[in-house]
Image (tube, rainbow, N blue to C red; front, top):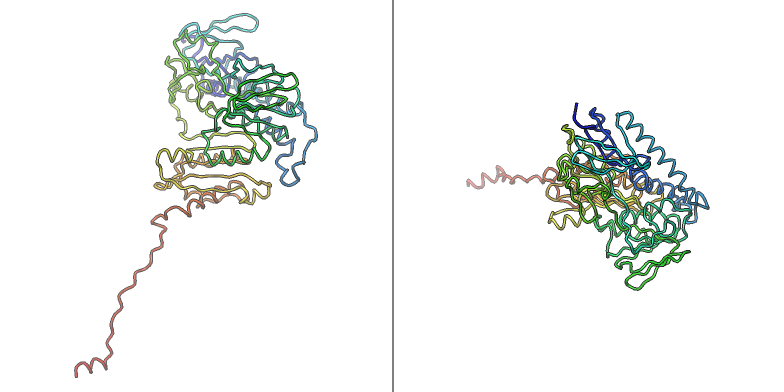
Length: 492
């Protein structure tokens, strides 16, 4: 028997904590998950990934957004869409997610404890419950998976109703007629474009001259054109000078002198690591200016070897998908069990309207590295499936090495982008080339056919491989024949 209460204590039940706990349970180790909420799932289930994506699907369904190219911009599935309509599906989905998670924990013998945890020693935590009781527990290894919380600067007059952050936004009493979103990051862009699809007048403010800089410029230009066409007023390059809560509306003053008035303001400019309550000083772990923890990206060990950290609390890429992988890898390493490493290429998905998804390098990255490349592009309107769905926009862009012909990156904007990207991810991780897309047969009609179109687009402009070059047969030198009569004449 170990001298500790548990082999692994996990603080936080978000994607990375969840996957680590289930992995530890399958390894038949004693594992405990501590979460400050009475329902498991963390930010991902309750205020982040699942709620925002559920809200997006509800908006697109009730608004009839996907059918408007056929039936006109005034087409609606439901004429009057209210906040209750959006919340109904949201709560059903969240309850189901929590139920599934609790079942997984029970099936794998994962223990849970509700309360706020803090370190009191290298191998000991103290857990305070809402009732005021405290419990001290020891663990051989620890995993910090506390995620992030919204950044709330002092100059923003949050009131939970008309001036809100990403967490409050989901609890709105009614859909505003106008919305201002500050921060054109992933969260800000997702919510701004969703509500634009509901015909809410949306203004999206970003202090920098550009946004979503990790996305290929061609895709961003296409995306910007589409959201402006959909009614989003995108204002780049000027910071917010002042925010006034006027009761019935919010007044925003920008440094360039412009004003924005809206019924509701969503502040979505950044998140902070949720580590302030952990008392990390007790174990000698330091955090950066956003309260995030540095780790070894192969093992997810912190500066204290028996304490691991995964998920959003360690920063980039801050995706639920990568967090799930990180938790599994960290748990296996902590419990000294060999496992497969993470794949080098993972997809990035932005659930805006339209969707954006990428995998691999962007064109700007290739130029910075001096890698010779070719581009293949396909428009969704070039596919029969695109015509059937009534898609007027959407594109797929592929980048190939001129030297090795390998796929280097794929970027997609448009309907189903986050699903389509996995074809590219598989080819990237298997070191496939442009030839795969030319040789492969895709279901017809599908949007996946865009891969074939883009592959041929690049293939037709790339140098022809030696084995496919057409070689002309060399003509043999002509033989000179002498007629018999001429031979006699020569003798004479």
